[in-house]
Length: 190
Image (cartoon, rainbow, N blue to C red):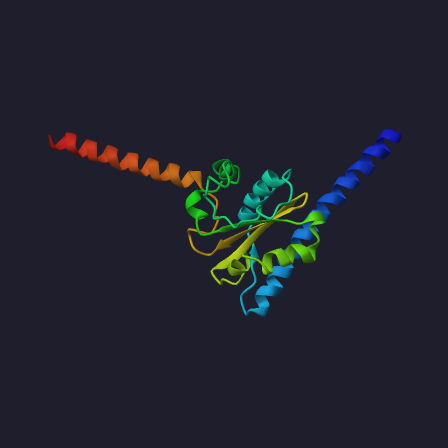
């Protein structure tokens, strides 16, 4: 009986920790959207695929200490800054061609105080991206003292649309079918 109570308390603690993280991320998105509204820009919509990538990047930063050099903005696909980037894309079922116009913006704030995190986005080199109307979506994730915002666009090169393997399989099948038809037509004419 006591072990069940401890298990239940542990589950409730884990649930409250994940809710806290989601709350912090929601507060940051709300704050960023308020900032953009003050600039007469449209609100960023939640982009689940960008969030998946943000989660992967936040995981990478999780055990790194906060330093002044840790938060340089990076464009997806820069393998020198994220050596595991291809793995992250694969995990999220993304294609690099659909992420090129996006921006990854990690910040580290002890305790992830919402106001300090928001200031790190709106009062730093990141504000030029938040001030840009080309960005229409965001994925946000956090781990420990790290918050990662990934901005997406509505363009094909920044939409973070999932790679659809069935499309490439269908295209390959269509191409092979067409090639077979050409070969048969050549054989008939010979």
